[in-house]
Image (cartoon, rainbow, N blue to C red):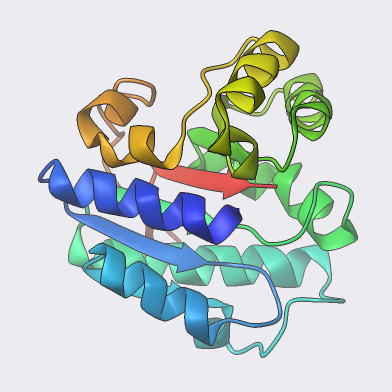
Length: 201
């Protein structure tokens, strides 16, 4: 449900009049996700292939950070009002865990939406993210397909639980994330954004 979550966040923001860029920074297959983000209304889209990697599997943390910063820096050139980034694979996957807990990730990401398949997975994922002080703002994903799933996930996590329909209500989603992004700034000659929302599973 990660890509579906991203596309609905992008679409909801676009419908709300927000200029949004999107990216997939880790994974193995990229082409279909890229075009789904474009179709959803992202005015600019990049993925890890644009950073020179056919796959991010097996990359070291410095390499993952370089991919992340390269994509983020290039997306900010168009001065989007929001950047939505997908991180592939689960929290226990080595590269995912390393990137999520890195200093670089914490510096530039302000909001995380966790995509879960069931309420138990949602509970464990939210606990993992909260224990590491990561800025999770909501849960989405396949678990939201039923009323029972949404209810049990709210009870398990104490978090807002957003279905695909909810995400399309861009104004409602915006209220969950920082209302004003810090201005993009320069670092070693490259401009990086400070407002990023990442669906993560």
